[in-house]
Image 1: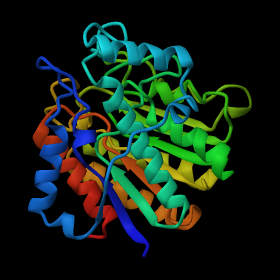
Image 2: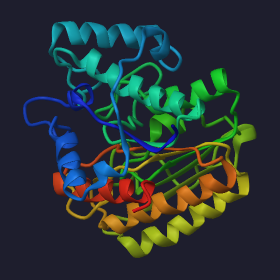
Image 3: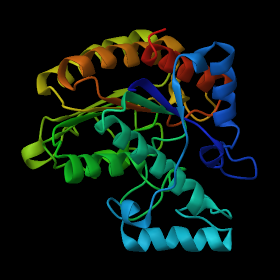
Image 4: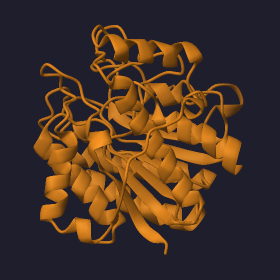
Length: 315
């Protein structure tokens, strides 16, 4: 029987988090899931078990050298996988592989007709590049989905939408010249925040010019500014009529996040989910995958992600 919504949660995903007081902690999944069950959302969706990506799957997007670097860091259990944001720890390779594998499992279940949409709160690792980790992101599950849609399922024109407070640079620059990757990113202005990219003039390169929409918001911007930007985002997406939609719903854009300076409320995330759900029904046979992304205040991420899940589940 087809499920309307698959939710990927489980111990293997909960293990993706960094030690010693790191802001990306291992209690993020639990904070969301406790609130979701309190609201009764667990009765409106189907829970799907995580799975670990194979090496072949990791290499669809990442270089061999990067995969080996993560394996080594996981075995040694200390040091950094990037320039100082993303620590190695024992088992990081397995935890990151579970994030990637669960995303690919969700994609397979949608394309096999077993589900219409998925939500994976521990996922959406949009900073990782093909050859390096970055910004708490070890393997880029989003890039693996995009490349798998092309290589295995023959879907070329798809949309990637990102409302995390940080620009999704690992996705943007990997597909900057790809005219069939329709890209929308609403984030805090890169002049004030990591990774320092995502300016309005960055609209794609070569044949892809005009297919990418970056909307930087000034520090302190709230729902009013977001909703105005969102109308531009929807216009952009509707113009290209994507065949598949991906949303990275980072909760670090909410007011009070310790790593950023926007002031959105959970209503922004719920609205993004509901309108993309409608667009997916119009252009993509209902196919929509959503990922939690960032968010470093546990109350905020629980509120934002349960709002998203409620929309996906038709609450």
